[in-house]
Structures are given as structure tokens and as C-alpha cells.
Image 1: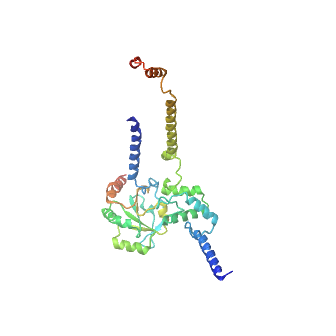
Image 2 (image 1 turned 120 degrees about the vertical axis):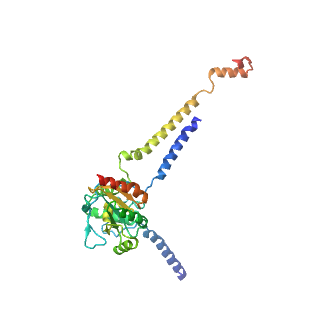
Image 3 (image 1 turned 135 degrees about the horizontal axis):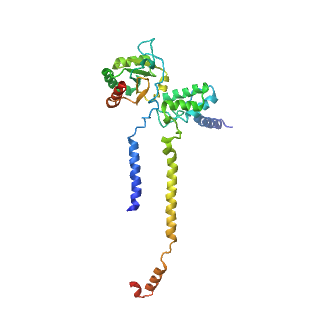
Length: 164
Length: 175
């Protein structure tokens, strides 16, 4: 192997290694995890909760100080043995249903849950109604028997047919 | 004619709905704490070291709790409004100094004036979480029985003070 080629090969290997390494640096900010199982539970729950400072991010995505605090609260409570349901209750008590990315099923959220289904059923009903009407119209003979006879008479040059 | 009336009607209704939506402020999340007892805590005071404050001490009084911090720009904006309010003597005003450095907080009060009867130190923001704080400044009106009756997220404006907070305090004081 020529020394020149060796240099080129090692450069190639180096660039590939660097390319592969890139994505490893990306990712969500996570405090050093002492307990990976717990950390996974924290992250799973945090993705269900809204960060109230940056409202279209989840608690897991956000690096706002409040989001960090709330993640710490979740971690602490889980360590004390609280269930996911307990922690969701804790958050809702303080910040309201708005923290939940999955809104609860109740009277004020009825429209939210049923609205899309109602719209879809309404749209489909309108579509089928129109299609059925169109089909009925297409199925109708273009001319009735009497009209056909009149047309034939006109075409045959019977002047009397015009007055009828 | 009739063919266009229905889609036009739907369009107008949709525009009206969206226009109404635009006037709403997504930051104003209705607080579930209204009508609930103010969460208890026991925290040190900012200026009088060694002393602490608990909402229990305020039983029997209508009072106002204002969450503030020296790093919060909107707090500076509402500061003159709170100063006026404190001067009026409508109700005792307490500050909750939220996630701040003690020196910074004291310097801030020194520079702009201190409208608070006392400021309570919440260094780690834990009490803030109990009060559902997510956008400093926030202001709470708490009644004689220790129940939160009003919450304002964001700076208190003169209009809000005059139309909401002062009448509410007067009403609660009569009760």
C-alpha cells in the first residue's frame, strides 16, 4: 500500500467516524440519570404534560426553568413511590386540565372529543346524500314517453305537433 | 341563490368563531386554585432574617400575594401599580420572591421602592409550584378564610386593579 493511499484511507475512516458521532450529541436535555428505569418513567410522564411557559412543548422537551423544576418534582415524587396517576393529579390540582396533552373526558371537553367525529359523520352523510340524489337524477330517462313521441313527430315534420 | 347561502353561512360562522378565538389570550389559563384554600407554607422573610411567614398568620384578613423576582421584566412594569395599591391601604400586600438571589432581590427593592408589607423567600420555586405559578408576576387575592378568590397571571394593570382587584377586596371585606 502506498503511503499516500494510507493517508487517504485514514482520512476517510476519520470522516465516517465523525459523521456517525454527530447525532449522538443531539437529544433532549436530561439530567444525569442515576436510575435509568426511573428516568424512563419520568420522561414518559413528562411527554404527557404541557410546559406552561412554552405552551406548545411538553415538559420533556422544554428547558424552561419551570419545566426543569417540574421534572424534578416528578422524579422526586416517583422516588417516594407516587404513581403516574398521583402525579397527574398533583399537576392538575395546580395548573388545571391545561397541563394535560390528553384532555379528560368531561362535560366541558365533550365538543373537543366528539366534535371531529360529528364533523366526519356529518360530512359523510352530506356526501352520500348528494351522491344518492345524483344517481337518482342520472337514472331518470331523459325524455318521458310522451315527450319522445312529440319529438319524433316534430322531426317527422308534423306541424300539428308544435301546437300540442 | 340558495346553493350559495349555506356555504356562505358556514363560512361566516367559521370566521366568527376564529375571530372570537383570536381575541382570547392563550396565556390566561383558568386556575384550578380559585375557590380553594391557599396552599400552606412556612418560608423565611427576605429582609428580616430569622423570621418566617405562613399564610395562617393572615387568617381573618383579606390580603394580596404578589409573586415577583428581580430578574422579571414585567415585574418592573407592574411595580408602580403595586406601589399605588400599597399606598391606598386597601389590603396588606405580601411579596413572594420567586427563584431569586437574596442580594439581587434586596437591591431591586432598594432601587425601585418596596411596596410589600414583607417579602417571602421561595428560593427553589417549590411554593410557586404549589400555587401554580408559571409566569411571574402573578397576583392572588386571598379572603379571610384563607381561600384564593382571584388570580392574575402577568402584570397587574391600573385597569385590572381598579375594576377587579379593589372591588373584590371591598366585597370580601364586607363579608
